[in-house]
Image (tube, rainbow, N blue to C red; front, side, top):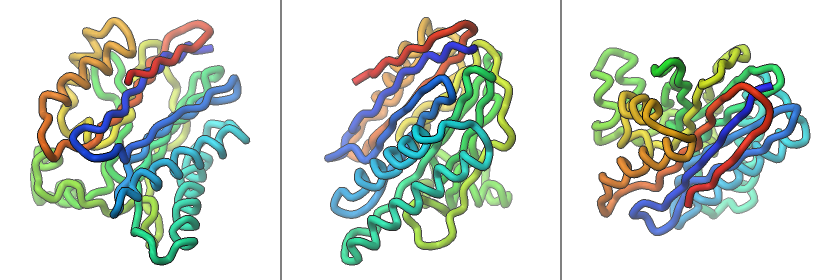
Length: 256
């Protein structure tokens, strides 16, 4: 049995409302964390993000399991819920949202995750980034095609243009990590919206994790770096941290 320490932050930045949402649900059968970043006119982005989070957690809580197909199913269920809400109000806003969901079986010590858009999941092990999700974005597609360097991901003026998102009428293109991955003590996950990772690069994430005394201290140190970039256009920023330890039990901390 693994111990899972969790902390999370979701802040408004310089925007009028927070269109990010996050949440978690845990049980002996399985644990789920989800982050969503919504967008849409007249503030409907916050509704899209909330629908994503509530749908994923409701579905997981009724049948907690950790597997590749189930990780896909959870985001497909969120897509169906957002589309149903939009169809109920045909004259409403074209709201959509990114999503990233992490599933962990603490008893078996295994994890799987899925995502769509540019909300990311990182897995850190032995002081390095072991896994990072790849954004479903125009800039990531340009980089993959050889039309630019990885630095573009944080600097390009069109970096927020997505190639897939929950709420789009086209077929949903989402990614999944694959077969459940065996976890080790001291593994650390970071699930974060683009308002977070745009201002904290991977080297800084690793350095701050190495110097952190707790899960919440790691988040607060990174949040301080995000806040240094404060400007009138500063986006909402949200992050969930999950750190694995040996032994029984779990702890969760909410940082305002």
